[in-house]
Length: 297
Ligand SMILES: NC(=O)C1=CN([C@@H]2O[C@H](COP(=O)(O)OP(=O)(O)OC[C@H]3O[C@@H](n4cnc5c(N)ncnc54)[C@H](OP(=O)(O)O)[C@@H]3O)[C@@H](O)[C@H]2O)C=CC1
Ligand SMILES: CC1=C(/C=C/C(C)=C/C=C/C(C)=C/C=O)C(C)(C)CCC1
Image (cartoon, rainbow, N blue to C red; front, side, top):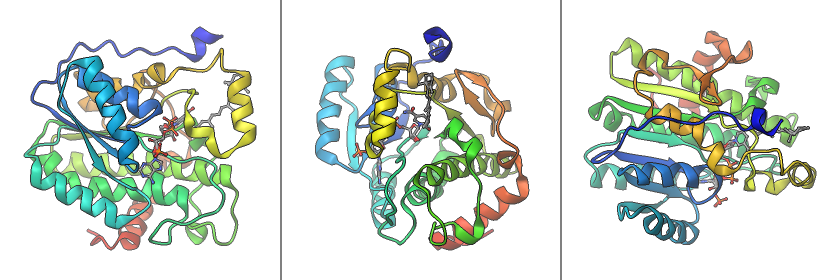
């Protein structure tokens, strides 16, 4: 059972000297392990985190463990578009390239709350925050092609729906479902972005994934989930195991033809019918642009 729940290993031997990587939410859990492995392979790794003090400690730890001093911390609060814009501005000023963007940060089952811009927290951080970040970094990714965007979604997307009349959860809110909706949005964004990038022949590819059920701080807002995680701790993945599919999508050679696909346990996997709906994906793209003040093309 443990083997079944923990399978999927990134076997790529690709090394990353001279490559630049951004990992959001890299101070703990899956993001930290992902950043560590990318640093071990020689990349310059930006830990894009909301708590800079926590992240600095992690950066030192990764530097010590990997011998790579090019592990840098930058403030990024995905619940505040000003912070996202400030992060992108500084990054674009200081870096010539961006080869891999890992949109990993996430919140789950928060009590109803809003971001600085008035978006419901799950859709605001998990989807809109990463949508804006990717938009702001996209030219740099194109200039650095071949380059990749990796969006960490979840199996939980199967329970998600995009309710355009209630995107901010103001009419109806259930914290678990709000998480599922935002994870569905991650997949729809991946597919729409992949379609657009393919059409423009940009050399940037995009992947979404489910990391598995992973022991991490994600369950911090739910006593029930913390209890389930504790009870089944002998079965669920470690953060190192949980990082394997992100690493697979970021590193595996020859994955370009699968841009837009969804992965689990380092293999392409199926997504729900909602997640394959191109009309919803296009509309979500347009609505996201509107909400974020990005010109709709
Ligand atoms: N664990 C699991 O079983 C599963 C996880 N996933 C996905 O994996 C991803 C990583 O989660 P996991 O490592 O498990 O969870 P953790 O809670 O351990 O890590 C989440 C990271 O996101 C960061 N974060 C949260 N809010 C913001 C914000 N507003 N701005 C910037 N960063 C933020 C956290 O920062 P801070 O430490 O400061 O709070 C933390 O670094 C998430 O997208 C999650 O949805 C998907 C399926 C299953
Ligand atoms: C019942 C049960 C489990 C519970 C799984 C759950 C509750 C998964 C939730 C996943 C989430 C919330 C993903 C986040 O994106 C385990 C631990 C697999 C062990 C086998 C029995």
